[in-house]
Amino acid sequence: WSLVDSAGFITPHPQDSIGYIDEGPEQVIELDDVIRATNRVETQRVQAYVQNAWRWTDARQGEWEINAGLRGHLWAPEFSDTVYTSLVGGPRGHVSYTPKEREGRASTVYNFAAGVYWQPPFYREMRRFDGTVNAAVKAQRATHFVLGMDRIFEMYGRPFKMVGELYYKDLDFLIPYEIENVRQRYYARNNSSGYAAGADFMLNGEFIDGIQSWFRMSVMKTEEDLNDDAYWQFYNSQGQPIIQGYTLDNTPTDSALIVPGFIPRQTDQRFNMSLLFQDEMPGNEAYKVLVSLYFGTGLPFGPPSFERHKDILRTPTYRRVDIGFSRELFMNKEAKNGFISLEIFNILGIRNTINHTWIEDVNGRLYAIPNYLTNRRVNLKVGLNF
Image 1 (cartoon, one colour):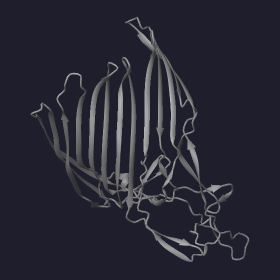
Image 2 (image 1 turned 90 degrees about the vertical axis):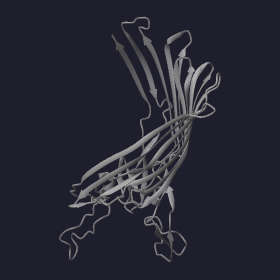
Image 3 (image 1 turned 90 degrees about the horizontal axis):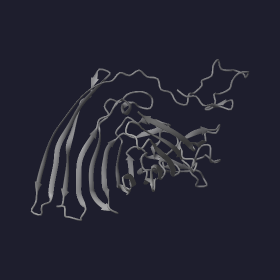
Image 4 (image 1 turned 30 degrees about the vertical axis):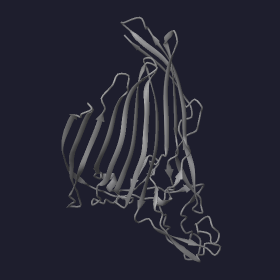
């Protein structure tokens, strides 16, 4: 349970009666959030799958490979002497094509995968906000379509690998959830459907001979639509939406039914990029340097009101630059080796937001106070092997 008690007052504030006529014998203190429950859930699970693979070479000497199969999942949670039995399953498969390699040309593999995936609920997904359990909640379903390419080639006389993927995932029977600091709290009902679509790209190889570096970039959009999140919005005589604690005129004169529709899911990060580059000192391979860059757009968040349609705010972009220096020790001695390294994480000292703490004032207004990750950190390491 939690009780909001700040600066000497409690919100919601109990009615004062001490010292007045007909004073009450006791006061009721309303707790902001209460969970008190004793639950016992026993679950039996059985999973099975069948799979086969086919390989052949076509007339152009290209290689084909198909992996396909079926997977089933039977689970039966027992709660309050009632057994809720469910059986789900679906097909999934993967097709790859490798054209015949020719001298001087890159090696390429084309991939396509599709399938139906089910995720039966665990205990936390069954538990409601008040601590009670909904053991009848169904499994979440995702239908995947992935198209990709792997390409191995040489550049500057050194090997490189490039991987690219396009994907679309249709999501159904979703169980919405709220993020509270580092805890996930589920609605415990299948009242949402959605989708995820995006593209991933990665390039890794030896920009410096013998040393691996890589570059990654991703774009994604994922949203969901709750089927029971419509609400009435009331307006005052000036046409302003009435918001308790914000508007002065709270007398409704008009109303409208608002249907939020699709809203961003908690993992809806539209763009993400990272880079790791390593180098060594010319003429002295014992000295090495590492630079890494990270950039990501903000994630959705909202007030702790358990109203998903309000979770449409965005955290600031995530930015970080790390740098490291190292020197190998005893390079010419086979019996022993070692290293010494100095790493500086977040060398630019950027204040990246991890989440928000919500503060409520006496009028019920909420303020989002950002919590930041570590500013700058220096790490010195020494390693010896004998």
